[in-house]
Image (cartoon, rainbow, N blue to C red; front, side):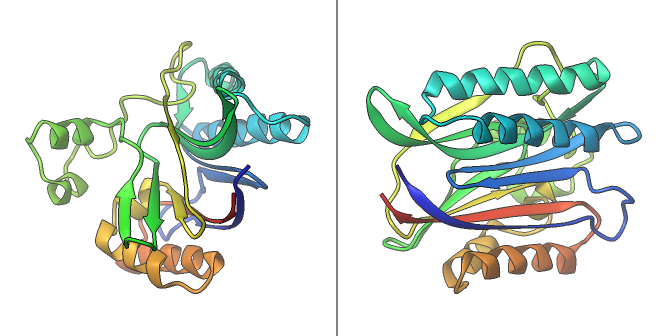
Length: 240
């Protein structure tokens, strides 16, 4: 199995009263969620996702199969839906180890516009591994907006998929391999909606430790704007 060192950081920002983001770090499981909903619905939704996966991981002694992950995604969706009958929801992006066809692999799952990136030092490549489920992301994919224009678009906060917004969940699940030294970034749009990818990649490349990287990314988001909750996890592959 892949082994990591990881660190997370979160900040409520300078405008909102509640931090509706949540994150989870376990040895081999990393998850970020950005809740949405009236009153404290978003906070409860993101917390429900974290609690679901924390309990699943902590009470499990065997490596997860891919279908096990999919079962827990379904369970998390049900738990969030039960909170507010579809009136609250949360994004989710996560990275974990699974067994698939008798092979150990990494898997990235996502719903909504929270993202997972990978920085690979060997070739200095910084890529986004997830696809946003949002109105502006669809417009960018259709060539109707640039990524820069999307950040200021009136529909930038319109999410087309969310955990708990409907009884059935449609999540993107991608299997991938990794190399020792790869750094993965999981983050909410409090970072990516304010900071250019190039700046994010430079920090992942230059930070001495994963904690330094996480702290610097949150600080940069706050310095650039600070109007939204911001949450990041940086996980680096130590061995395989």
